[in-house]
Length: 413
Image 1 (cartoon, rainbow, N blue to C red):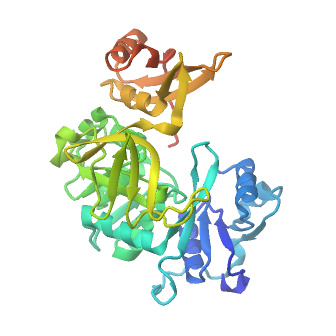
Image 2 (cartoon, one colour):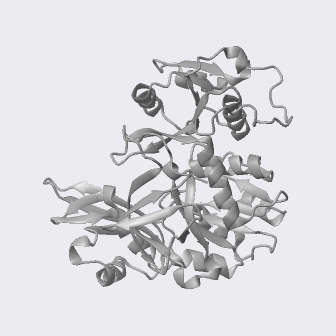
Image 3 (tube, one colour):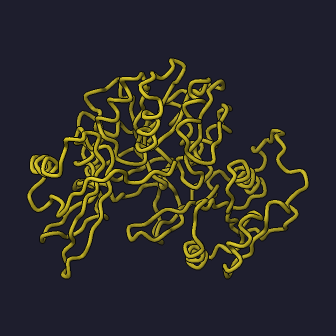
């Protein structure tokens, strides 16, 4: 990487598919004081071109197998990792302490969707990551003998943060290039102590175990990233799953609240208590966050001062945070403002709904027709039953225009 003689102010896009390659280039960028940006593995040319044009990222490390895919991309130079070295892939330990000149500088930048759905870049500092590891260590108590399964995408802050924790704390990370229930269960049964998942991954993991209890050495299953039904959590606990629920976002460098469900089963629907260095405030139902893990850099041209106002709606009960929806997913239906995420949270807590996808269609006016596609685990459950359930928890104008029971929503395994 040094031999490439990159400009000092250059950001380096990482467009690779192998997680070991991704992390090698990521840490190499830090070694030479360049800012890395990890791209999604499955990014399309259209998405990549827009990111390049919008954010002026004009240098990428990629791989030979993508050469035909990216040949039409404009305004960017691509260098292939196979050309970097004839002997890359060594495992010698490196001391980073003398390489980092300013802990308040940008360590890496991360793509995230804004309120309009368009991709924007969020910068995170070295100190953001350091404090994030400290806060997580306070919650989970990492040990050097831990073996942490990393099956989340590395372009997501939740996935990358696992690798950063392993470098700072010194535990082993089991890298996976994609989610696979059988492989994860194999690693769990053979000594892995921690795994981070989103709810759909947890559901498939339980299905794959077919009722087999989790081993006692499993220390934590960390759940975040999306609404998780109480039923799914309870099912996991029945099989000795040590569930830790968490809440966070890219702007906060991973999680900033959470709790051990087994210690507070009456708060199962909450997102937990704020971490020890983080302050969460709620004004007019909108959540704002401040603390050392919040990005200190501008968002949409505005300085954060390490305090951000999120688009999340919520409330506190006995110190536990409960999420109610978002202000940026509001649609107008039947003349009423409806939060799609709040609707999803309501439906997913039906005892027999295991997965859900919500879509909207314009009806020829400014109104939206809300269509809910649901997957159920009870054959006798019908659409009318689900409508009856909705009537108990939603006003009539907030009930979906159409509900369809489907065999599956998505399955990326």
